[in-house]
Image (tube, rainbow, N blue to C red; front, side):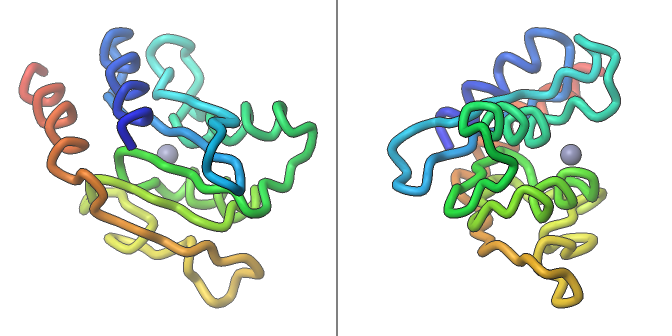
Length: 143
Ligand SMILES: [Zn+2]
């Protein structure tokens, strides 16, 4: 989560909402992909931290299935990212702060654990939640 928080800091520097993510290898020792929000920086509406980290991890593995991998993200994933998580087959999602306005991993929706879908990763929430929420609060206070 500290690595994801470092990524969140990079997002804020570029004027993006400070959210960061990393994808860890199945044994948890290697960062396969990292990302931070780049919507403002790139003008790409899909450039969320999780999507970018998943894309980079898949590119590193040369394989779209991230079976056994863990996605760690500072903020609860939105519906788009929850979809990407299900599609990538990561086995675990760890997030920090809840997103009561747009969260799709237990708050507003629970897309990642929807029993109608064929893949449901384990979800661990609230890891370093206060530390993950702080840059977001500061970012939006400054707006
Ligand atoms: Zn998202």
